[in-house]
Length: 460
Ligand code: UDP
Image 1 (cartoon, rainbow, N blue to C red):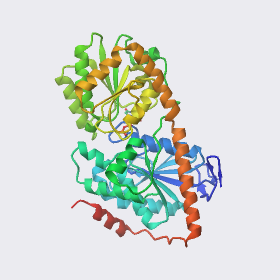
Image 2: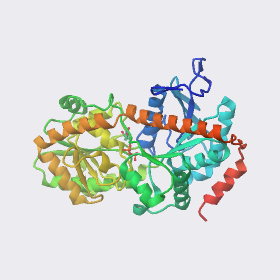
Image 3: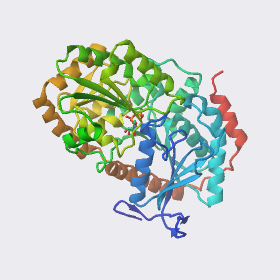
Image 4: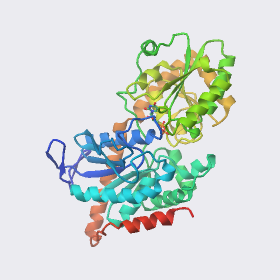
């Protein structure tokens, strides 16, 4: 039975950290490499980690017991992190307890599936619905679906078919493209985070399967405009200086090089002092260090080191100060399935100049909340940044419109309500299907079967 958005049907009995039994329906979110409990902004930790964590916590508030599964990458990391009474991250040991790049993770996925099954058995759980994130988790979800009668929901976060148009395809590309097609055709529902993603799925992946558009969200309590003078004072920025901001990971597909080259042109042509603040990145020695060093070298080569600040990784609690202090936030990605940074910046009332790609076409309204320009076009970025910096009256209008747009359309609360409705519909559907046909036999987990599938999807 469903009351509003609260769930009370077929509940699992869960032990909470307080020793109580929970009558809540347990569901699993799988995010193999995107640890929902990780520090965001370092190595490969970015939007996917934020999405799973925020969706998980918001779903728990709506009445679900949410278990979020990821791969353990450090021996010292806790096996279970309890975020709230009904929402936890569970780190499964699958392969070495160290960072492994996504391109090399497939071989550890059979062990991940086995660890997931073991955890379920140990806790006496049987998740009737699993929401997978990224293609590696989709691979795990498809395995689990073969073995039990589970409702499968999937969010891509990134599509190989688009990504490989701009970067060299790694060895895992063939397997990825196969899994991305299979999950679309076999999952009960795929969640596209923008109409643009839905269109790309239909054009590039498959016409089969069900797709529902549910956008990403942002935390409106955290990301909101604060007085600009206060934000600038906190960062030690003078009122005279114009600030161009980048927030995100150091990854070549993020297009930081385009921004830096464009910014050098803005410095050249601007009569006022301008500064580029680059937020994000790990400590030296981490996997994203190569790109960080490359960008640092480019800044020196262009002779703009006095106008560029590398602010390092900042938590979500600190980011609103950066967004509010900035005159414009730039997202120069070659490809961006959604782009959380765009809505975070806009929620703080900062206009966005972004590449005219993917989800950015959906979130940024040209001339109203920012500008869209062709990706990798240095002159176009320089021109668009210059336009926003040079017209204070227009920028003021955009600041207001930007924060309204996010408040009206992109809160995690509303994302969770839409996901919750979808889950309830799928679970209700599977219950009525079960009443019509003999119950599906639960097949015991077979590690050898999983390995065989992994091998089948490996590139020869
Ligand atoms: N982020 C952060 N601290 C940093 C850099 C980035 O918290 O130093 C967060 C940022 O606020 C956003 C996420 O990382 O929530 C990046 O998500 P987005 O969708 O923009 O890009 P992705 O990382 O998924 O490519």
